[in-house]
Length: 424
Ligand code: UD1
View (tube, rainbow, N blue to C red):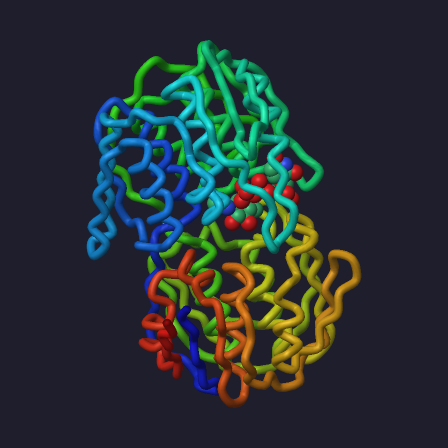
């Protein structure tokens, strides 16, 4: 199992380029099986989650080629003969749930292993089930699998708001099924995340009829066939936000390029309030954090365009370095705080009251052996290690490899002292 060894205290400089968005690529790859011909999907980073999705599609009978150097995937769905996504593969990646929609649209049936919980919380799937049932899908849970049959997918109006707001992948699953359903589907309280808009744009290019993706009410008129297309995935706003925060936490001046400014307003607004200099031009931002007198903040994670839960841990790492009391309330995954214990091992002073973290920032972070627990928590540990005194060893970095391509090389090119240690 690999570890990362980081010697902190080094300012960063230079430019870092952002990859295509993992969370857009995964449902797009799954949706490619709905076409009558091959699709080419570009700007896809060779992450382990992407490879897991391709393994699942291959196990269904699709032919998948991944040119990892060019970051281009070709998917030919012609040979698909199975509609079962097995436990051994789904357990590696919760996002496999987004195969429900494409399998139902293509076969009218599917069997997808129930994804279960994870360290960031319970992760229920009631909204997926409710939305699909509204489209005339029969669903039951049997022997750990979601068994679904839809001999006749029918459009309907469905409200997808849940206890914690909208759901990204439930909206994706209903949209994917509705594309091939008879008649019109309206999704109310739909998720508005840019990754969902990217999925809709991919489907529209294939021949789907979808209006207002990115709004709270999406209308989908069913079509009978979809063709394969050549499509380029949007930049990863969470990777971009993580590198912006790497520049900020190390009080550096760096450039982050190949991003979309409009996907990052919630983060850049908060950072501007703190006192960070951010200068956008075209697809780049100059991050200037050389002035060290930053202000603490009070933020709440919310569905897009609010502050993303996937940047909560990284933001917390930064707040731990800012003198004063910052507050972060988690409204999407109320238990997503496992990183607090590890940050406190690095001499942060963070306490938790229900779903609100209180960060007493400003005392120096100190390098320590720490354990990565999930993808974004791992990124927060890397950021903290970059600024901590001495050496930090981060264990279980396979979590990081699920969502950040070549992170140590990218940070090294910015001047960080970081190395990967291979352990058998
Ligand atoms: C996606 C992202 C993940 C991000 C999350 C929230 C992918 C592959 N993953 O996950 O990185 O952290 O959005 O922005 O795109 N919920 C229910 N019932 C459901 C489904 C969800 O109550 O049926 C709840 C969840 O527990 C959570 C909230 O809704 O509290 C939002 O979750 P959701 O948007 O569904 O997350 P994912 O789509 O799984």
